[in-house]
Length: 216
Image (tube, rainbow, N blue to C red; front, side, top):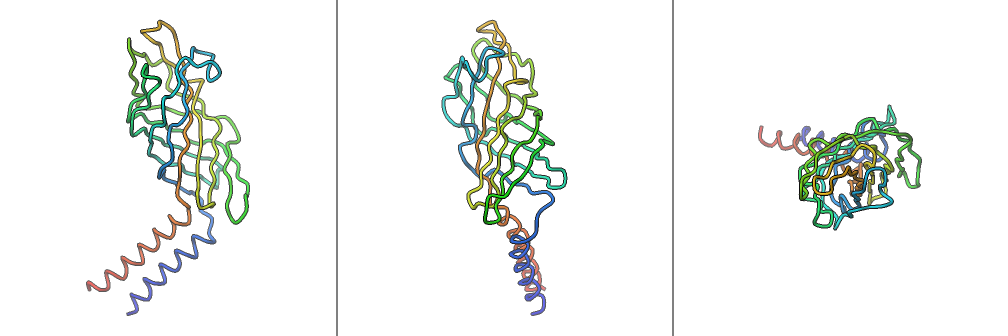
């Protein structure tokens, strides 16, 4: 009986912590949204204003976005789970992964306990692996795109994050066109309510605690 009560307390604590305690590191897994939903391939130095190729449609992604309160930085990992097609001429293939660490940000409240995360300064990402396909072949010249426009809403009940990579640093040489190209891609994803994550973690601990008592 005592262990059952302790398990219930753990679950209740989950609710309280989710409502009141700020997290020093808050990881938001990608749970949906359009994913990669804007993209351009251009002659080097002309993206995104003068595209040669445009993304045909959104491509789903998985990954996570982690906010570090102590350092006011964000880490990003996004992996394509389906091919991203640029007009049937070039593709970023499923499995392509973009990572960025220590992206500087600031936060500000937007009401009701929710807040916004906004990129504050420059940052650089890494695309590894970078999987591409195109007629005549694409030779990767650079896979370290600039990171721009990072924004996340947290605690709104319908949280979302958006971020762009490139144009600088994401560059190719086209065998078909015989020229250097660069890409600019934008991701928009849905992420879960952070309180849900905390409640689930501690609540599951409480249920496991009670379950262990029943088996004893």
